[in-house]
Length: 374
Image (cartoon, rainbow, N blue to C red; front, side, top):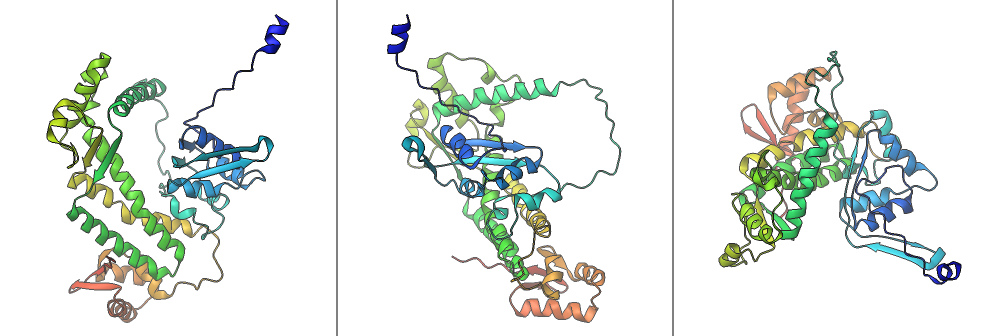
C-alpha cells in the first residue's frame, strides 16, 4: 500500500471560487479571489475600516484593483515563486460598505487618486427617535432572505442557460434628457474648480446607467418572480428552453434584437435580448443624479484639501448650494445665510448668466446651462 501511494500523483487542489469576497484581504489575495471567480464577486462590509485597514497595511495597497473593477478592466498578477502568472480579462464586481464619516479618510486618503469618484455615496440622517426594539410579527429574516436567494439563483440559472447577452436600449429621447440633466450638474461642478467633483459627476453617469439596467431588469422579469408563480417549479429539462424563452418575451420590456429573424422568436433559437426601460423608471433613476452628486460633494469636505487648489470664491460657494433649477427667492435665502446682500446676489446671478453658467428661463427663474459635446 505504501509503494502504491507513493507512485500515485497528488490530485490538484480545487480552485476556491468565492462570490462574497472578504474586504480584509491582501493585494494578491483580492486579485486571486477575483481571477478564480472569473472576475465576478461582491465585497460587502458593514464597517468600512475593515477594508480600509487592509488596504493601508504593508501587504495591502489594492485601490488600483477597485478602480480597475469599476471600469471592468483586466487584472493580472505574477509571482516569482513557481513562475506563477494569472490573468482575468474582464472584471465585474461590486463593493458595498457602510460606516461613519470618520472612516472615510482611511479608505480614501486623497481626493485626486480616482477612488472617490468611483463610489456612490449616501449620507443617512441621524436617528432622532427611539424605535421599538421588539419584533411583533416574529419574522425570521434569515430564512426569508435564504428563500429569496434560492429563488433568485434558480431563476438566474435558467436565464444563463437561455440568454447570453441582455442589452439595455435607451431611446433617443431618453438619451437627450439624460445628457441635458447630467451636463447641467457637470457645468455646476466646474464652479468648485475641483477636478475631483468633475470626475465624480462624469462617472456618476455610468453609475446611473448601471442602476437603470438593474431597475429595467427587475421590471421586465417581475411577472416571473411573483410569489406562487409556476416558474418556481422544477421543469423537465427539454421544456425549459422553449417555455422560459416564451416567458421572457411575454414581457413588454424584452424584445428580440433587430437582426434576429422573427421566426427565431417562435422556435426559441435566439440567445440575445434587447431590454427597454419605461419612461417612469428612467425618470425615477435619473432623479437620483442631483442628490447623489450632492452627497458626494458632502463627502469631499471630509477629505484633506489639496493646498495647490484655490479656495472656492463666493460665487462658487453660493451657486454650489443651489439646485439645478431654482428661483431667485431660493437663492436669496441662501445668500442671507451666507451674509451676502441682495445687491451682491443679483451681481452673482447676472455674472453667472453672462459667463454662460446660468440661463434665465423667465423672470426670477434660473437653471444651470446645459453643454453637451457631440
